[in-house]
Image (cartoon, rainbow, N blue to C red; front, side, top):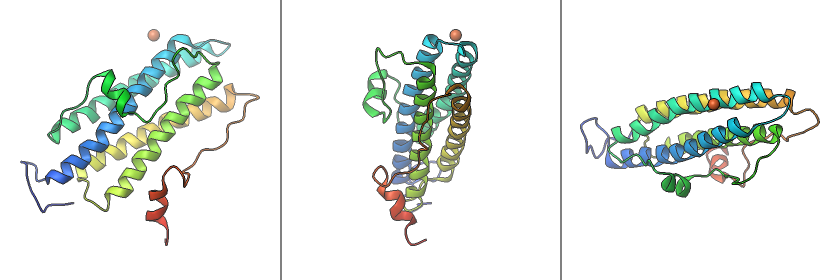
Length: 190
Ligand SMILES: [Fe+2]
């Protein structure tokens, strides 16, 4: 933890708070886009697995809603404004929306899975990167719990895909060197 320039009442340096808020703001934007995508799929899913998927998407946006609130409030605790407009979320997000596209159920599940996995990879990477510039313990702890929540939600989508997605094959996604070269930089040499 970087304690060199204590600027606030909870013992965090300005740099530490700013870094934490930056990461959380990115996560908040991605979570909002993902939450909206889950609503979209909850409304528009169709096919023989309609009932299960309709409920699954609903449960996921409910879980996400609670996490979103914690992330936004942590940004405030660090002394920064929590963005709350779609305009800002769309500017900040790393996730992709597909306006006007109503794919089949398997593609919907696959899209949600990919978004959860992207969020997990980004948070994992930020946690590793921040070991080198002083992310505060409270924010790191929250990020770990957010990452764990997305890992669980991703697992549910992955398990659903393997049953509902008969005839489809989706390659395993993993950290790719082209996407996050820094991850490999921190891990090279053991
Ligand atoms: Fe509903």
